[in-house]
Image: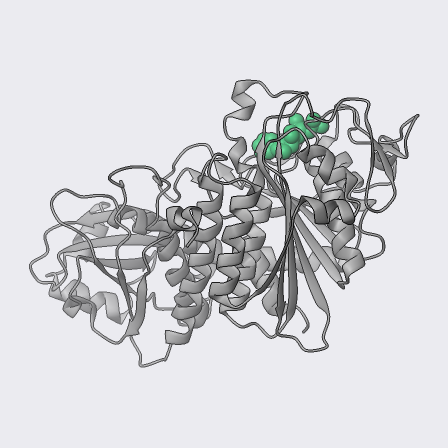
Amino acid sequence: MPALAELIAVPPLAVSAVATPPHEAVADWLVVPVFDEEFPPVTASLDDKLGGALTRLRESGDLGTGPAETLVLPDVPALAASRLLVVGLGDPARLTRGRLAKAVRTATRIVSAKNDKADVDRVAFVMPATDGGPRAPAEIAETIAAEVAIARVGQGLYQRESKRVAFGTLELLVATADDLSEHVTAGVALGESVNLARGLVNAPADDVYPASYAEVCEAVAADVGLACTVLDERELEAERMGSMLAVARGSDRPPRLVKFEHRGGGDGPTLALVGKGVTFDSGGLSLKPSDGMKDMKCDMGGSAAVVGAMAAIARRKLPVNVVGYIGLVENMVSGNSYKLGDVLQTRQGTTVEVLNTDAEGRLVLADVLDYAVTTGCDAIVDLATLTGACMVALGEDVSGLFANDDDWSSRVQTAADAAGELVWPMPMHDHFAKLLDSDVADCKNVGPRWGGAVTAAKFLEKFVGDTPWVHLDIAGPAFAASSKPHREGGATGALVRTLVELASGYGE
Ligand code: BES
Ligand code: MN
Ligand code: ZN
């Protein structure tokens, strides 16, 4: 196994759906979700065993049932489990996947926090009663498994002693004999793929550089059963990818392009996922100040989302055709760096005047998008930590959605909504493209100060031809500056869930 793969490897989580009554579940923690309504039979009978403690705590206001509110009861003799955690889900009629995910992660972050007193290995999670609610049991089971798998893993890749316990066993306690095991398995596969994306982003640029990253891609592909091809610098030259190669030139680490293929859909259409993989963005000669550079190991977040999604799609054997392309470069400063005023020859033929070497992501994507389109696909989604301007517009938690096709745009939006991730459509009027006109070349790589997320998208649009295309600017959501109760700081694995949801429905 490549050293980087070993570094980001996560101990496996065994998940099962069992019909054990909650008070009988033998576990280090019993997690009980509650809605802000009368306790359903499963919770009421647990409350009975506890002598009505839950009802009293609720009446006294100590037990909150609002979204992601928690209460820990560490010593409950009536239970087979050592500790009890109650987590609120709010109004059952308003349960979304995003709200459920947040509550599950909040609970999981509490039970997986390193505790000197006892090691945590087994966690039992009561399946919320869903009668008449908007979410199907299968979706709930899958979401719980996925989000538990995600939230039990921290970002302390290099700590001698981790601050989280990545516990090994999760039991979903189901009321009926419904067979949900297929769904918990699918959920864990998704969670592990989100963790793969997180690991790749959390590992710093000295460990994740184009060649080491491409090696991990090959190892992952072999593991999950994906076809994988890696193009090295010479092959990129042979492909005349002048734009991507210019960005790569200033680095001692040569670039790579990785292509994944999942062919589960016979002669149906092919979806292409394209990711920006700038393993470190110093800004190049348009150098970033330290504050803007310190998190720029995250600039391959788009590519990591593609790798995570491709892994999940293969693990789930989805009956669709999906190809993934990631362009891997390091944007550095050296005597060989590309310069302001340089004119680049893209693979497609459009010439680009470079007026800011920190607008490098679009130069990488120009060639990779063109490669994807000319190699053959019926629809594209690209993901990139592309602009600070998108964060100014939408904040840290919402991805910008830019498209050349309304139907494709709404399909991606629908997938994100269903996956519980936040994306919002952005304008793409023609006049933005004019802002990229150049006096010496076909276009410039930057526009004026205002509307920077849109001009970046208009630049990318030049390279996708007539193929329905969506660009997701994930500069905000890919990387969290600090931890919150519902998520670890650092890499988030954002948009993996959305891409898997989109692929599941693709071809229908
Ligand atoms: N990788 C950055 C964008 C970014 C900023 C990602 C903050 C994540 C967090 C991108 O390559 C960049 O530097 N964009 C410039 C574009 C500008 C030079 C037109 C930016 O946003 O300032
Ligand atoms: Mn940049
Ligand atoms: Zn960048």
